[in-house]
Length: 159
Ligand code: FAD
Image (cartoon, rainbow, N blue to C red; front, side, top):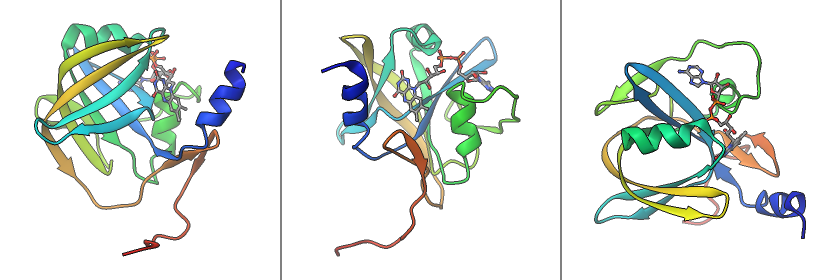
């Protein structure tokens, strides 16, 4: 099985999209990530997986804290910007939750303290303890089959 086939296969798992943010000496950095999951309620832990080649890796290892913003359906440009998919600069509106920079207009903002790190192949898994959060209204930006998507039917299938 080659990497492309594996990547396509994993793309059958529909996800939301997050922007991971951190701040060093007043300078905010962000990157797009869909490898995110909720892990534990007590304590409140969430996991992200970051490529060893990403610049964000060293930054989080240094700050040991970061923000996670779950994007809303009108934040496609933000996702593309923080994935390096567009050349032109866009104006990004940051907010603060706890002492972390996060994206304004996201569905959810979390501020996390780094709790644990696991090496996993060519990625590093960061487990963060959620210190504060801000929940907003809206629909999610989704990712499925290597493409950005919106919800077309915003209704639940079972109650
Ligand atoms: P850079 O490449 O330096 O930064 C990324 C981009 O963000 C640059 O274009 C930069 O200009 C912009 N940027 C940074 N800070 C700011 C700021 N303050 N204001 C405005 N713009 C800013 N990779 C993973 O490791 N894990 C994942 O789970 C993951 N999921 C992804 C999901 C999707 C849908 C996509 C499209 C990509 C995903 N990636 C993931 C890839 C990852 O987003 C890119 O490789 C990204 O470019 C890595 O960023 P970097 O830390 O190397 O920083």
